[in-house]
Image (cartoon, rainbow, N blue to C red; front, top):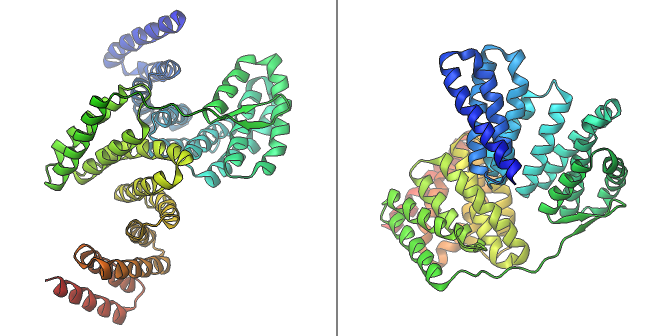
Length: 452
């Protein structure tokens, strides 16, 4: 502990000194960037992830400027630092942001097999945390294929990294219900593990910690077993619990009154209160983070909204494993909002993935309202990606759902039916079906006249 604190203090002193020197002499900026990245790693190891992300982001910004002037010299350190930033963001539950920076690291590393394999392993771990198992498995298998010849050439330097990638794909295959497919990788990992226990015992401990974080333990023969631990009841006192309820309810009321900045503050206070509890009430924290993101999104603060949404989704994924009937609709709702927010940032493909998962979850629940909303947003993302036939099919489904809902509750759902009919008009126009588009526009007007 004292060694770590000394190392941190030393790194912080070096950063402070280098900031002063680099301000006067820009030739010291590469050293400052490298030292900031190192500080970020030390802060990450000591679980100070917010500070780690901030230091590493500063290093990324410096390397990005340096790479513009000298790409051959600085693209590789920029890629490494981006991957490190992705790791910190992932640990903070900011998975969408982590995926974005790690994907950039992957693209920058295409000419460097070892760095590419490392970035792909990080990408696989983050996608796995998001529940995107097929994408995670594909990324990690690509990393493994890259690592194998590298390890043959230099086992001392890279065998541990291959072992970590193998551990990742085994966990991902198990989570995807493909335990048999994981078996050959388990045998390969067991052989590497025996070698590493002699050559790199610290790496074995790191890999064991990595898989334990994802709920597994590994046996000597390479078999992976799910850890089962009893759930910890929340010890939150009733006064604090009621305070969180009050703050959350007041925030929702403020959203309804369009007092959005005040709503953001109410939810932030509730989140702060919940984080102070041990253990944290994950369900309440997920709810407040979701609502915090809702208010931020309405203010146009989309990037900030993504941070809160990412963490809400991470918490709700964990909760679904214990009580799927209760938490699946909540996870689906957060994924729907994530899909919308990513679209606002122009990340339509990522938004589509979130919405496809949201739709799949809503189909498992008795929630036609949520399904209609999510299918409609799915159609919008498909349209943004110029997949107009698929967008039309999704819009037709949303219309069918809203027709049925409006028959039972016209006041609530006729406006949504009219809005979806507007979307149908746009789908037809994209496909050159102008007569159908005019008919959809007439029906939308008729619905609105009926609303009065």
